[in-house]
Amino acid sequence: MVVATNAHHADHVVFKDLRSLPRSSVSELLLSLQNLEKKQFASNEVFPFDDKLLAKQNTAVIVGVLQLDSRLQLVAYAVCVRWNHRLLLHKICVAPAYRQKGMGTKLMRSIIDRARQWSCRGIDLWVDEANDKAQGLYSKHNFEIQQSVPDYYGPGRHGVKMCHVLQP
Image (cartoon, rainbow, N blue to C red; front, side, top):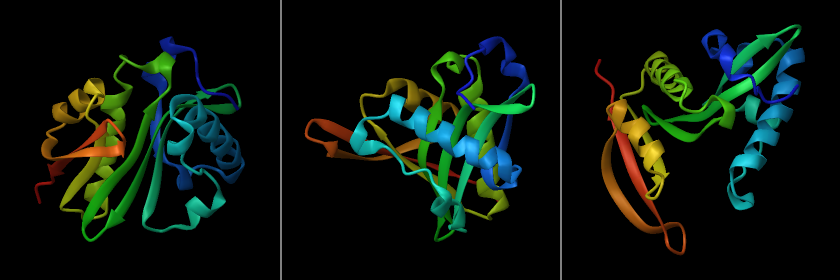
């Protein structure tokens, strides 16, 4: 399995919890998640996608996948952790070929739906202050800046905490 590169199929991408997919697909998707993660994030920010992750009941990996022939191709993903009636959006990524095609919006809707299914009162996330595109995506989905922390990601890389309140 490889990361999807055929952006004209964007309308056929579906978003699902990784656990809900057939076990045969999950193993391949975990490898695709690892590969995309390594390409898109600094080595000290790479998330460990493995079977242990699936055992954590308070953690969900939402994947955007495209069915091509007999295999699934990874388009986007998010890692969410439920804690104390809140959802922490720990990680979000869209494959480069699918950026600016609405995948981030679809992924955010899936995340918000998951938070509601888990009866969360809100969603929290941290984003690099310099990442204007990500902040724009979050703002579009009613996330508001709550706090800024100097050097949150390391020297000179400031973090911004954003929150989205879920209406009952």
